Length: 64
Figure: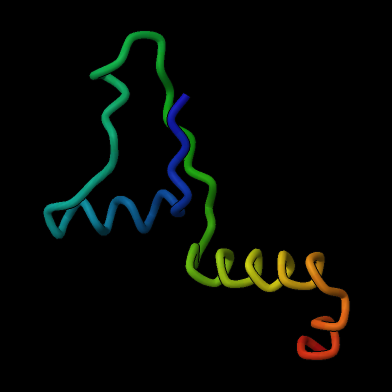
């Protein structure tokens, strides 16, 4: 299984620009699944903030 974090529409638009995604035809018994995450950078930023809160709950006040 190949997971692509982007929405499929974004990947298709990227393909028009010369980019694209992994082609499951290059692998045996493989499928591609798009995860529909619109902005992976925001997801990463939120994950990092959550990690900071777990390390030190006093950081929660910075997020409210």
